[in-house]
Image 1 (tube, rainbow, N blue to C red):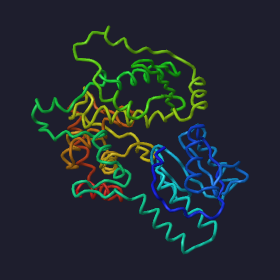
Image 2 (cartoon, helix red, strand yellow):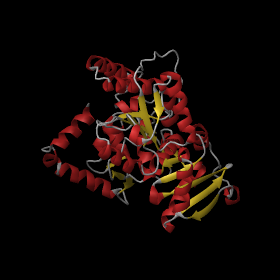
Image 3 (cartoon, one colour):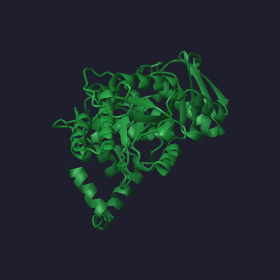
Image 4 (cartoon, rainbow, N blue to C red):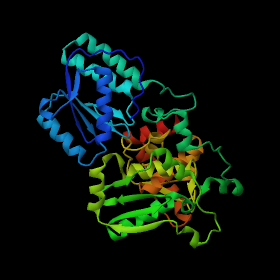
Length: 399
């Protein structure tokens, strides 16, 4: 938790009791320290029957069911949702992890004022909270991004997207620069472990680089003790050269284990569990950094099979715009580059993440089908344009 906060005024004069769900002992201790420092004896962690408010770690096992139970039993009590990535909700408050103390304090002050039924001060608290949440999220002139993407700092943006300049896609030498081979990176071992797990309908224990990771596709779980900084370091590091022999790739071992073993680990230490899709998405972005996976032909049509759940993953710049344009019909990557008129690294990063996670795929085996698709699009253009969604797509791609 990021609880850095200096000289923040203490507003609490009313006792507020909080019940916390889904945090381990370390997380609870950190919260307890926060309450003591900023609320003195006016905020304590209690059982749910005595709570004025609730905090739920939405990344913990069974969090959605527990939240639903809270909503049924305590419909009028405020709930703060804690999650690795932003959660869009109108019913509750939401904070991304690592928790920022200023945001949490602003929300709790608002809850306190509502408890005292001070309508005027509640309105002021709403303004303060909104200001805290949108600080440092203004888009630059050449970056028309969504709110979630804007929350990425410049440093985070560089880590996820990289700094690669656009290349001439008609130049074969420059074209070669946009590709990377996942097998040469840590990501390749994760993909291999995931394929093995799905093939045998089980979980996989992956050991290498001085740590062990557990993958459970059936429960959408990953158990890993690495910090994001360490994981990113492994993600960007090239482990193998093109001419490395298979003997040099034996530093990793794979072992099939029962799903229940992974679930037990996650329940014992929830702070080490992550959602598989979110984990794979961010690791792919760190590894790709604005590139495409080796073997993907930019002249082959590819489809976005489902709309990504942006509340659970890192939302990169232009992600919504790309999705809206792409999901209407299969398109080649070259066509998307020409139509969207955004920097290539944004499109390449987003495509690669969807491709590795399984949200997108190639839909044609030869280039002749590409031309057929283009003809079909021309024939159906008049019909498509009559739909509201088509007009929205046109607006998004010509803006």
